[in-house]
Amino acid sequence: MDQRQLSSFVTLAEELHFVRAAARLGVTQPALSQQIAKLEESLSVRLFERTKRRVALTDAGRVFLADALTILRQFEQAAMGARRAAKGQIGRLTIGFVEASPFNVLPRLVSRLSRELPEVSLVLQEMVTEEQVEALRSGRIDVGLLRPMFNEPGFGKLPLLRENYLVALPASHPLAEADSVPLSALREERFIVTPARKRRYVEGRFRAAFKRAGFEPQVAQEVNQLHTIIGLVGGGIGVALVPQSISRLDLEGVVYRPLQDDDSPVAELAAAWSLNRETPVLRRFLAIARAALVDSG
Image 1 (cartoon, rainbow, N blue to C red):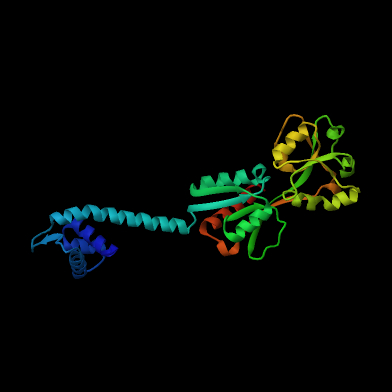
Image 2 (cartoon, helix red, strand yellow):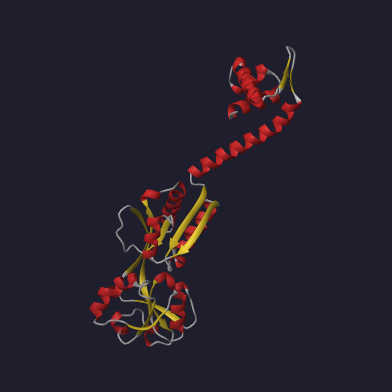
């Protein structure tokens, strides 16, 4: 039994006329008769009563018709699902992201994905860049939103964001009223930072600037989360260097000031993926990401 035999049966059951059914199917009448005969042989039942004047369904044929219609609908649904999956319209996408991305590109991308691909299931996993690179290698995530601090063969990369760093200060700090802050003015400050494995990127960005300023930052506290850093700044525990988008954390008692141009490196964010694991859903994500970049100017 195959789909062609089922379609032939259903069409004949609807028309109850071999000539009209054959015309609808685009086949000859003998070819249609042959398909029906093969189907009846495979089922070992007669589906139609045939005379020179009329064609009628048998009791077995009437029962089989309801099931045949269900099977054909399920087949069409399965075929439609396969076609939509091949176009990246349904499926699953696992996205790794660094902690700063929810303050900039991640909400915009997730919103567009949910709107344009509502049947794609999104799984979001926060990871530092090193963890994302390993997860991309092993296939545990499909795409990473990370800091471009690696040169991995076999990876695609799409730049998403460039932004300056700011210094977060307690509102009562003498520098809070300054238009911009030279890094050298922070020589005596104590810095609130993330643990070493999370701050490799920012340390790399500021290494040359601290060298020019002639000091190494003193660490007041190490904490895991950016919002905790900003909260401690507001509590007067120290100062922090953060990407500009973090200034959206508008906490009481905290002000953000730009660094002077020579002291202000750029924070970058990129999408990365394994070129060996490009799925239709991933390609749709990248197209949406590129469109979001164009729309954001």
